[in-house]
Amino acid sequence: MPRLEDLMLFVRAAECGSLSAAARELDMEPAAASAALKRLETALAVRLFVRSTRSLRLTSDGEQYLLHARNVLLALDEGAASLVRNRETISGELNLSLPSDLGRNVMLPWLDEFQLLHPDIRFRIRVSDRLADLYRQTVDVAIRYGAPEDSSMVALPLLADNRRVLCASPDYFKRHGIPKKVADLSSHNCLRFVLGETVHERWTFHKNKKIEALTVDGDRVSDDADLVRRWAIAGRGLAYKSRLDVSRDLSEGRLVAALTAYQGEAAPLNLVCAHRLMLSPAIVGLRDFLRPRLAELSA
Image (tube, rainbow, N blue to C red):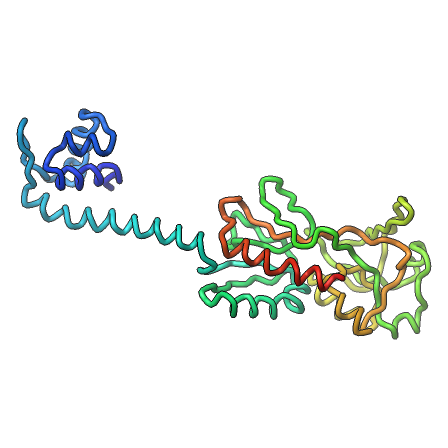
C-alpha cells in the first residue's frame, strides 16, 4: 500500500515538473524526496517518471496513475472537510445509551423534539440499565446516574444535585403504613434493582449531617429500573428511585414520598463519553438541550 506522503510527493512533482521543487513545497530533504519516489515506484512495480539531472516528465504509466493519485488525495481532503463540518453543525448519527426508566418515560419525547430542531441528526438508541462499554460497543455517549468508574472518561453533568426518593403507591401505604424512620424499612417489602453489577439493597439516608443505612429485603429484584417503578405504582412495595424517574408520578399522585425528613442518596445524572475529542456539536448540543428540561422536571 503506497504511503500518503509518497503520493503527495508524486502529484506535486508531476504538477511542478521538478522533484526538487516538490520537495521544497512539502518541506522535504531532496534525498528523502528521491527515496519516497523510488519507494512508490517499487511498490507499484513501474517507472512513473523519466528523469535526468535537468528534466522530469511522466511516463505513460505515470500519466495513468496521476489521475488515480489525485482522486485519492481529493477524497482524503473531502473526508477531512466533512469531519470539520460535522464538528461545526449538529448532524450525523449519534449512538446513544439511555437508562431504562428515564429513557423510556422521560427522554424519548425530548429526543423527538431535539430531532425536530435538528433534522440532520440521526439516533441509534440503546435502552438498558447495564453500563455500556464505551470502548467496545458502538456507543458514542451514555446518559447514566453516578460518576463513571473509569476516571479517564469524560462526564458532563446534566443534573448534579439529583437524589433518590423513597416512595410507594397510596394503596400500599394504606395497607402497610408509612415508615417514619429508616429502621421501619425492615418490616416493608422493598423493591430492589441491579445497580452496575450488584443488587442495590443497602439504602442510605442523610439527616442532620448523620448517615443512616439499612440493608433491605423484599420479594422482587430486577435489572430494569422501569419495571421497579411499575411495581411500585402497582402497590407491590417500596421503591428507592431517582427523583427524576418518579417526579411525574409523585406530582400526579401515583406515588407518595416517604421519609421526607431525610435526604436521599445522591444520584447525579451525567452524559458520559470515552474521550474529550468525541464531544461533537451534536453531543454538546444535546447536553445543552437536556439540562434545562431536567432541572425543570426535578423542581
